[in-house]
Image 1 (tube, rainbow, N blue to C red):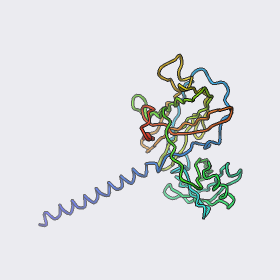
Image 2 (cartoon, rainbow, N blue to C red):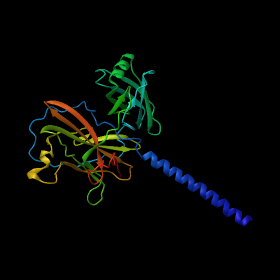
Image 3 (cartoon, rainbow, N blue to C red):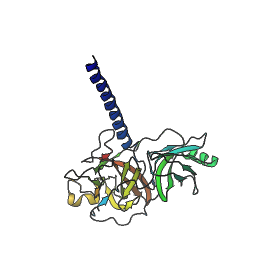
Length: 317
């Protein structure tokens, strides 16, 4: 009996160790996964371009770029929206951080000054900044219900401007959907870690000048969400196009049956760091010289066809 008891005990210990390994692996995988999508791009619809001039006659080539390695600074973990507790006049922001620091929030729709500010304590790359607004601000927020906001997060000599949506009442807005075409191509033709962001072929009922701007949001467990534009982190260039009932006029040269859209890339992405990326396009429709602003995610994959009821949002590296 003793000879058989020892192997059974060893098997039990081995089973426990295997179970712990599986749990630790699952915990590590969940730590790498985003808590939610990145939310609005930098500027949150407030940094609009000047009315467009003459649109180009052809499609300029995209430029190479690279997602930086490591955590470039503090980032939001789930930037879709924050919800105001009107009774307590408070809301919270969940941050990925590298050191303790301060947060200052502004919202142009509420006023030019500071909306809220406070400190946060960083532990294990995570922090929750709990912020309080004035009674006057609560009244304004309750009237507007949903506003674009920006958090200025400072830590260890680094400052990041993080865009988010602050909701103060009513039902939660529906999640931002996908453009019906355009896409974020996760890899190059050989399957390497190089992404390409392809412009959607926007259509309008009648010929309309539009301005568009593309972004790639990237997430790591240590850094949260950050934004890469055509001119660097948090900086992108607006493109001028002519939208028509068949799509962007410049994408259809000489009545080409298949559009030739603007493509940004190749965008090199470091591997082995648990990086997740999302593609986003902003668009301004210039109707009578006045801007009509929208933004949405693009489908991630090899084509721009989003699945019914949604699409594939993420590329993982």
